[in-house]
Length: 255
Ligand code: PGA
Image (cartoon, protein in one colour):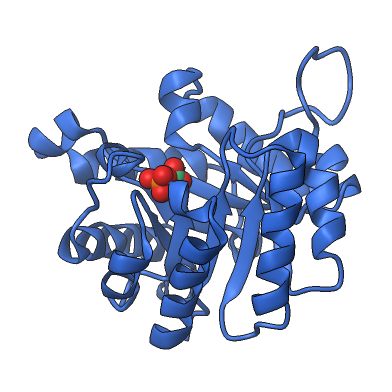
């Protein structure tokens, strides 16, 4: 039995007041929710304010990135212990915008996953293929390469803290969602890889979210698939009513 996990990735959106209002609206409706795990991931500068607004609720807070070092002369970077200090529990790593817009490679992502775990942060590890890779029939090779590289050196015990997120790059922010069959197929591949690297039991309990244009209208279909354990939501997590619709869908299909 896997608990569904719905997380909102706000990306570089909302100002402080809007972020706090959104957090307060979510807390009012879902602050005591136990059936589904919830988190929001605001920009660095608003993490503390949002974590304070959500204090005492079941809704966790995550960062969208972190640096590999714990302190030092790294102008512009933010360290894992700083994230913990402002109330973060999660950190999104390997997001396609960091891979493709900001040039992060598998080695950096692996280093960040290891450091996050060392610091006591729970990684939400994103992976997914680009459109041309899907069209060339390379999806399985791409996601398996990303998974193996990102989890190099991560122990079975540490995997209890890791959430995976399958995010086909062609579905992110495009309004073009993977069909539930496409999502289920890749989620099954990822779970099979985890079974091979670790164990069937570990694969069975690892949460694998889907991300890419998830909306209230398609959330039920996607999350009802046996291997889709929730959603990592970008655009639709910026409005309380849309995000609430996705959370309600997760509650309704809770497995
Ligand atoms: P989207 O973003 O829901 O806006 O497609 C998802 C993500 O990038 O995590």
